[in-house]
Image (cartoon, rainbow, N blue to C red; front, side, top):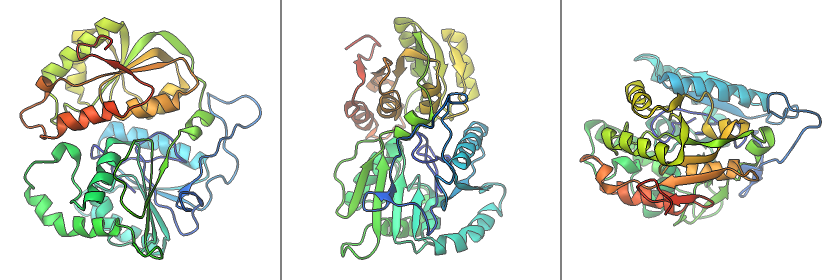
Length: 384
């Protein structure tokens, strides 16, 4: 159960690259990180793979129930539907909850999940910042709590947990709490206490499974790195084209980056590197993407799967251009063993809006600076 880092619900299966969402029942699979995080199986079935996929062995994920708290955004819903198919292929049970389907939907969702959550010994969530997830955390008595997410929110979550701060998304940090924040504050505080591990060693255990770098790990929290072995075993290797592809970001939609400056930066990058395709973030607005296509001539692609799976299936450009985002951490792992180069262009301070969080520039620079196996570009889009 989860919301993705940008506020939309999402799901994953067996460590795939995606905004993750899962609720593991009492008989969920064991693995690493003190038994909290399932091991990443490196497997290849004999024979040719169908459509770039290696079939999963029967019963690979038996005993795990994945709950999708469905958003209203059509693009995210479409990706979730496809990811749910992959989860079922892995042997998982998937429950699709229309969690936002009207005024009574939250009551139906919470009521329908109450028994499952109270029975579960392990709960795996994708986004601890989600109000929905925080509310559901107050219901469960699970001893094992696992955060599975390859988003920038994971970096902030671990840091805030270590400092004992309230859970606030990085792009909202520094702003004054709104009326809804104040109303929800008791639930958020209770969820943060639930996500704080027991110091005795015999009580609640908390684990994090992510490809993102985390520092200042709180005592009692175990961290396991997602190496994307499932993704590499399940898809590819991809066909690689000679050109460059550009990866979009929702920094304009979240109010961090000015829209006009962003379009100028995309055009400069595309021209400097000969990019022909623009892989849109699922949260990017149709109006912005239309203006981008007209101004730059780029072919805008709306992926029906997370980009890591799209890239692994191919075709994909020999160079992938990105602004600071999770893909500068995840794509090198998903494309390990291929000649694809991931290049990142930093955000100019002048691109930030007047409403951007005071921490935005430092946080985005940290996302880029901690990335491995990427080529750094100067802010003009030229090699640094």
